[in-house]
Structures are given as structure tokens and as C-alpha cells.
Image (tube, rainbow, N blue to C red):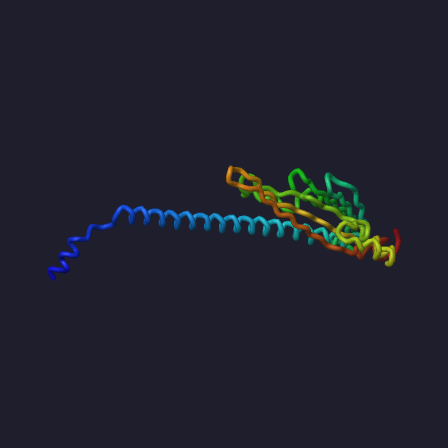
Length: 219
């Protein structure tokens, strides 16, 4: 018992080296955890931004595809930048089959918004809760007859010559390219961007039907 008490009395506690070593190790652990959390947050922010972009683009493609499928006449003109202005005569599904309505589509690269008529496709796009230096861009929004835009599919022009002109003239390619950009706002930040292409091929089924002239066949 006396020997055990002597050992306790001789315990002088932590030395200075042990204290410094503990502080250094604790600092390394905290810094490593901080870097890991920042990287995880960065990944979450990027994933959220891309998901929002996907949802918006898919809504645009789905809606304009629906309009084109019901269109009897389609007129495409150049718009601002690499965009198209599309005017369609569309059958109104809420009225008689021969009734039509005019639908206009256009893109505004300045605000990164796409308009259908007098309304934007999504009033919450671009999202207003993005951070400083973040933004979205419309790189391309075009509608072309199949085989006339060979940038994405060089074989399309050759296929067009082998098919019926009446069918090909009623087939359209929709191309939408959006880009998410994050510009550096601090000395340790770095620029990052992500660009994605969305597309659809649509046959305007009503453009070659008798319904184009009305149910009775008269103008």
C-alpha cells in the first residue's frame, strides 16, 4: 500500500510536450473534419443545382413537345442569341377538334427564362435562393426540322433524303442547353460550371391530317 501511494505522489501530470502534442492532434482532427464537411456541402449544393436545372428543362421539353404534337402549323424564326421563336397553330383540346389557338415560344438569354405566350414556364426559375456568384444560362433553345440541324447528328441529313418529305417536314428536333455557373467570390474559391443538353424529336401528327382543313374538309 505504501509503495502504491509513493507512485501516486510521484505522478507529475502531463508534460509540456504531451500538452502540445495533444493540441496539435486535436487541431488536425478539427481541420480535417471541417474540410470534409465543406466538401460534403459543396457536393450537396452542386447536386441540388443540377436537379433544379433538370426539372426545369424536362418541364420545358415536355410542354413544348405536347404543343408540337397537337400543332397543325409551325413557324420557326431566329430569336435572341442561339434561340428560336416558335409560333404554332395548336388544336385546343378543350373545344371542338377544329378550333385552334396560337401559341408562341421564345427564350430570353438575359434572364435565362423561357416564355410560352405571355407567361414564363416557371415563375420560380431561376431559383432566387442561390448564392453569390451562382447563376444559370440558356446556351441554346432551338426547334429545327429533322435533318436540317446536323450539329448533334451528322447522319440526319442523309436519313432525311431517304424518307418522305411530307413526313420529314412535319418532324422537329428540340434542343435545349442549360448551364449552371459558379463564379469565385473569394481568394480560395474557384470557378465551376456544368452544362447539359436536353432534346426531343417530335412528329406533328396533325399537320398531315384532314383535320388541318377542319373536320368537314372545308377551309
